[in-house]
Length: 235
Image 1 (spheres, helix red, strand yellow):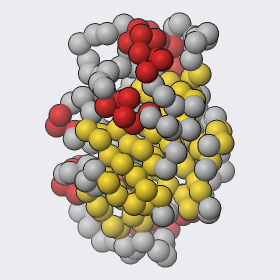
Image 2 (tube, one colour; image 1 turned 90 degrees about the horizontal axis):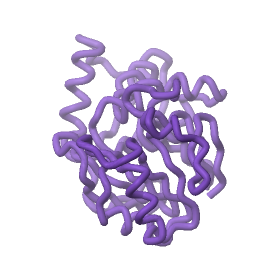
Image 3 (spheres, helix red, strand yellow; image 1 turned 45 degrees about the horizontal axis):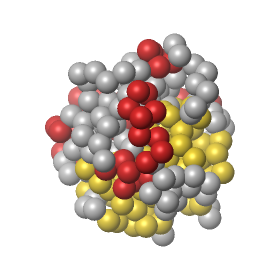
Image 4 (cartoon, one colour; image 1 turned 60 degrees about the vertical axis):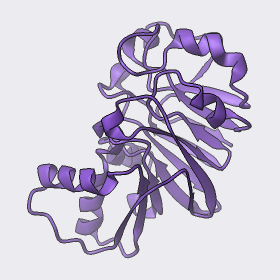
């Protein structure tokens, strides 16, 4: 499995990072793990043809994680995608997508390709990969989930929760959000908590992502690997 970091930033693009979106590839199958509004920028910046994507998997329904879907949809409509695009996301994916389309592209209801929107339960399959979706502790209106796709684990957005231990168990790579330096009011995981619980996260490699400015100000970190836009990881 191959991972390309198209964007690893938080909602406000601290450090000039693009919004969260990871390209995951295995045996020629390409999926996006989250799809932030800057996804087309990330794809084009790295010479990746947007038409080559087979599927999208969404962790939760905040705009910085799924807001790129309407732009992908209009791109595929405008430039003639010839095959279906499969999208997996949490409950209310279809309803929120339609609201976003109505706001971003009012009246654009025609679609010259097939868009398949699916809401996942705990277990699902995408591109022959077994996947797991576990509820995490973030804004409940966004139906937040952490995801495990084969050997890759992703926290999504969440404050520290024991669910992260289950997601990380046996993973080759765990992408864990770190939105804050110290625990605070927003529902994000903090660097302080990750340091405290690091030994309990039984994954081969742990990368921090979705860094807030107060965490970026502390870089480099001697005890953690940190994602950067454009990074490539062999899993």
